[in-house]
Length: 214
Image (cartoon, rainbow, N blue to C red; front, side, top):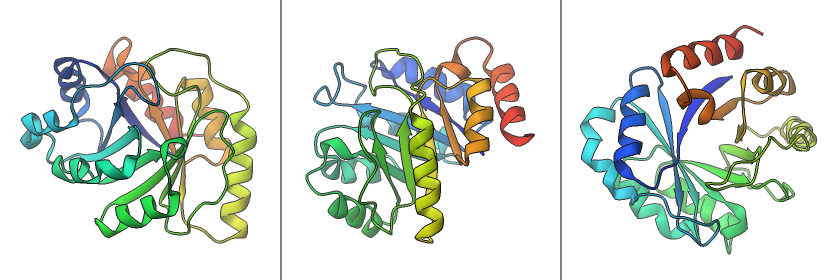
């Protein structure tokens, strides 16, 4: 399992601080994008990432689009040098078209499912399924234990259909939850508060140790 920091900020200057704290310690960085339609509030303009483009040229960018019609954001994602683009299925008119267009752009593609959304109809070309551990957005909430049933179904589907997608979980994750997620077969744990609340280096060291040593 790998740990990927998630950054969700309304103010780019705050996001920039977080990126600089982890850019030399993490290969992947996830930038969360909210446009105010799917969830209240709005994150900083994605294009601002290019202000620090040279500083993160050795990192891989994972863009999580919590926006209306994520397919319309492909050009912006390419502009900032995204490596993987994940869209919330609840905001898509056509999931298959989203996957197709992202792959045509030469990027990895992920589909994100909110807490109450059933995971069905996964296109074979999908690289990642992202399960939200709590409701998407700026609001805080406890980790939703119902996610474990979703994980079991995904692992079974992946095995039975011989599919190659990775399974990621995002929201409300801590050290103890990471242990359970790894046991269940999760490949990626996306962490925000667990990394940035407190001493970042110490937090990353603890989380990586747990993810690598079960």
